[in-house]
Length: 104
Image (tube, rainbow, N blue to C red; front, side, top):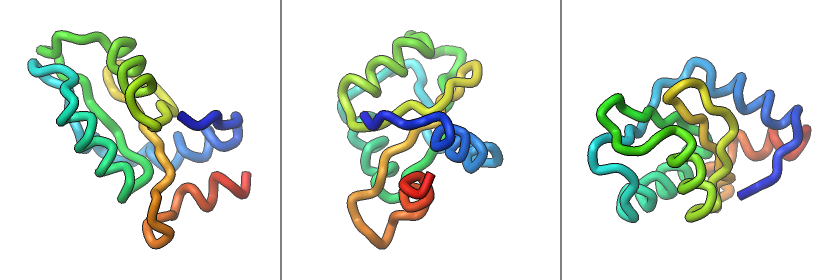
């Protein structure tokens, strides 16, 4: 998990504003396979939203804690049942947001 400054979080929140959630947490909750898929997607995109469905057995706080504890992903923002997640890409060709974040 990366420690982001206020300006960096502000930039990422703004960039994620018009995005639609790509992942959802449902009845199955948080599995290792789901976390691996999430990490793989973030390694390509760097910034995504995750929706926690109404039928999920876990709360927003539990999802946030599990993601931050078990992965290198940073939770940038929580809006109701939606999380904005950020992780710098490992491949230089996929870096877009992380280059801007480093400048701030």
